[in-house]
Image 1 (cartoon, rainbow, N blue to C red):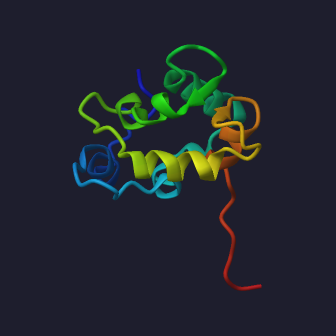
Image 2: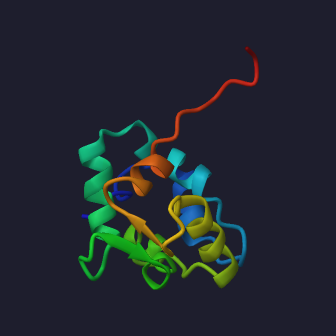
Length: 116
């Protein structure tokens, strides 16, 4: 079962099925599906669903289909959305997102307070 299924949150469904190009916000999405609050093992399981070729990395082509990993009727990300997502997650600049470092970081970034 894809990691986002059964969450019962209409906001998640809106993100997954929103067909408007260039509206995907990966930070908001991961927060809404609850991956930011999950353990490293749970995040890795979600990653493995998205890693279609089982390479240990999510490459740009796989990233385009990230929403379909959470819902069958999810749309493909646009090139602009895919590149922005990849740029945010690809900390070592190799053009892909690694299972053991980069994806847990982007999915589990802690919320920061605006007040100190």
